[in-house]
Length: 499
Image (tube, helix red, strand yellow):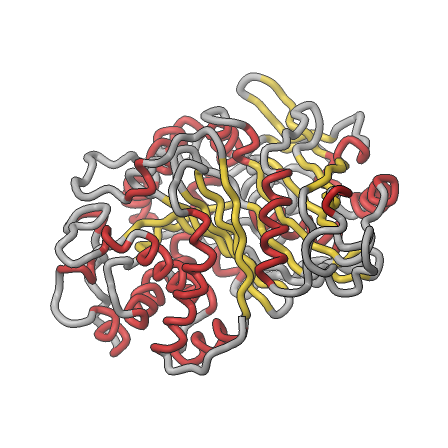
C-alpha cells in the first residue's frame, strides 16, 4: 500500500467534534468556485390542504431533531483542523423560513403539478445557508395570495381557495450531507415517527477493501487529472454554460412501465432510468449523434464504449453488429453512489458519497442495445467494485492527494454531466396528510451544464433537471424523457401506459 494512503482514524464519539473528512473538505473547496448555494441539495415535498404556520413547523422540527442530533452540528475548527461540532447556540427557528411562490399546484394533471414544482424550486434554489450555524434549512413555500384564484383545481383534499396546497423544501450543504444522508434526514423529519432507514441490500459488500495490487491503478484511474484532452466534437451544452443563473424543471412519470421494462429485459430500475435518460440526451442534440459525427469525445479514447465482456449472450446483444461507428460514441456521466457505512454513529453528517463514471451510449440508435450496454456498465457488480475502491480511498488518502484529482472530477471536458438516483424508503406526511410528490433537489457542479436526479415516490418517478440557465432547450428535457420512455416501451413490446 502506498505510504500516502494511511489507515483510517477511528470514528468520533456521537457527541464529540468530528473532523471533516477529505470528501467534506473537497466539497467545500468546490463550493468556493462559485455561489455557495450551487452546492445545496435536498428535496421538495408537495402537500394538499392549508399550509401550517411557521410556529407549527418550528415545533414539529424541534421534536424531530431530537432523533437526528447531527442536525445540531456546525462547521467549526480552524486552519488545518476543521471539524463538525455541536452548535452551542442551536435554535431550530434559525432553520425555518417562509416564502411565497407565484401560481398554485393543481390535481388536474402531473404537468400542472410539475409546473408549480418548477416555480417553487426557482423561488428557493439560491437561498443562502448561515455558515455560523448548521448548514441546513426548511422552507415553507405557500401560494402567492395574488394567484389564489388562478390556475387549476387544488391538490387532492385541498379544501378550496386558500387551501390549495403548499410545499416544504429541505436543503443542506453538500459538504454537510450527501444525497443519501439528505434523503434519510427528510424521512426522519417528515416520515413516520421513530423511522430508521433499514440497511440497504448488500450493505456489507462495500466493507472489504481492494486487493493490495490494485492500489496503484486505483490512484491513477480515480484521482489523477487526464494527461491529454481527447479531440472531437464538443457536446453543445458545454459551450453554452455561463455560470451565472440556474434553471430547474421537473418531470413526473408513471412507475409501472419502468418496472415492466426492467422485468421484460431482466435489468434493474437504475439501468432502465439511465437508458431512458440516454435516449432523451440523444434526442436533445440529435445532430451530435448523427452517423459520421465523431461525438463529444472523438472516435477513440475516453469517448468510446470499452470492449464488451466476452462471457454470456447478453454481451453479444450489447455490442450490436461490427465495431466503431455511431454505436460506440458515448457521453460520460458521473453517477452518484453512497459509501456510507450503515453503522456510522453520525450517519446524517458529512459527505460520504462516491462517484462512478458511466458511459451513456448516446451514439447507439437502438433503445434495447443502449439498455444492454448500461446493464453492463452500470450494473451492481461494477458499481459495487467502484464503491469498494472509493470507500477505502476517501477514508485513507490525505487531503493534498484528493486535491490532485479535484480538477479532473469536475472538469466538464472529462465528465460533462452528473446523474443520481435517490431512493425514498417511507411515506412523507404533514399533519396526517401524505405528500403527493417528492422532487429531489441536486447540486450544480461548477462548469457542468446539467445535473439530473430522480426518485421513486408512491407510484411515480419524479425527476429534477437542473441546468445552467444559458443552456438552450433545457426546458424540453422532461418531455424528451417521457418520449424516450415511450420509445423504450414500444421496443420492449410493452403496452402503452397513461402518463
